[in-house]
Image (cartoon, rainbow, N blue to C red):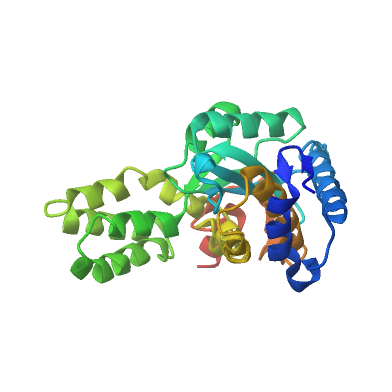
Length: 305
């Protein structure tokens, strides 16, 4: 007996269920799987249409995640957005089906969030190659952009021979670990001068996103470890992808989407508050930060000196 609900067969879903529940999924009848599947589908539908107007999200992290799915869906990915509230709690805002990471797919996601009351965040963090950036400038033009340093470093190293990668990685590390924007700019220029003649593609890869790579200096230093990369998504989905490998590319994207929703919200329960979350109120209120320090503190330091 095979039951189909919204295009997902129980055969597909039992594979996903095994990845989620492990040995507890064994012995479940088709009818039980069908009812559980429908419950999850209904939960997801309610979740993705929930009202967002009562909460303010200060930062968001975005990415497109690829899973083992059927070959005819190989160009599909899951578009993910995680946001941090004014209280420092991190939450999933969107887990949506998308075509690769196209501008059109991200447009649909962001317009859906806006229609449900989501307001412009102060900063968005993600891979510089995403179609997301063109979209966010149209839908939320006041949102600042921060390119992920992990993604950027990997993209740069891919344009260099292996013998040069270790040194180049240290150069990029010197940029984003600098304590001030001035020192970061100096390290940035050094990288360009070092590689632009022999490896121009690597230098151009870094240079084209200069402003977006250094945006974090205008936010509290306590938050830098969170907003320099899209790690909140990467760390969560490395675990989810490991667990979904059991599906062996035999499931449809609809199955994966529902499964990722359940695994994602399960992981969300264990997330810690953003470090220095009390500073989020300052960000919301438009307090200006220079090299991670608010202007009032800088003024006190100058007067004390």
